[in-house]
Image (cartoon, rainbow, N blue to C red; front, side):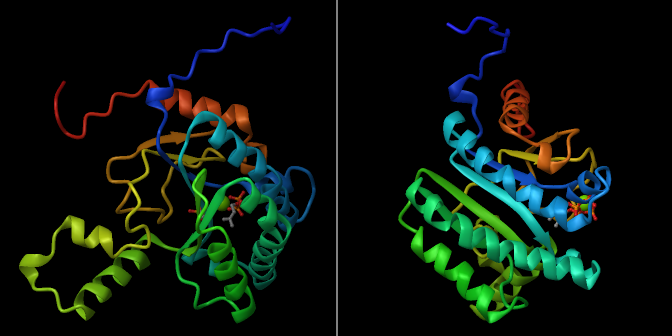
Length: 242
Ligand code: IPE
Ligand code: IPE
Ligand code: MG
């Protein structure tokens, strides 16, 4: 028994979302408020990841999708883009063994072709090394754009010579980067911005949204717990009536 126990509402295990997706936003503002360069914010935004992955396992989340770099983020200053690519490489190097040992299966969604062959190889290696893990699936959305993903799916469908009558929602879903993955139940965006910024626009058609007021580097276990608690109290109707 803990002496200064706080009255926390309980998370009902049966109501925990299977798939949580997070738009990790606010690194730049976190840094600026501390008088630091934006890249320091991006670095800080990798420090809390371990805690969040552990908390996902603790709370029973099975799939976590994190938005790390969008197709629009290429428009940032060259130094920031380079730094973000560098940080991805560093995180893989630093964390891969532990992620593997902890049962995390890493996946990538987005296009790899625009990044350097060396980094592509790192990403592929990480995916390969962890492919048999099943404690937590982590999809890293890097060079990801929802519209680009849909265009990619259309191209694939045309390439496979499907007839118009064969095309349905299930088929389109199968050609997305997230094929064979359930849609996100909950999409979280940190930093207080209220927009989707081209993230999982097909898959989140019926997701619940939660906007956390804190910047991504400050998003910790308790913040995740809050998001999950809100989710468990939502009434998902999917267009129907109760
Ligand atoms: C999110 O933080 C990380 C990426 C988009 C790569 P930002 O860099 O967007 O931080 P803000 O929104 O400018 O504070
Ligand atoms: C969305 O954040 C992309 C990622 C978090 C990777 P941005 O900061 O790039 O989005 P906008 O510019 O605020 O829409
Ligand atoms: Mg931002």
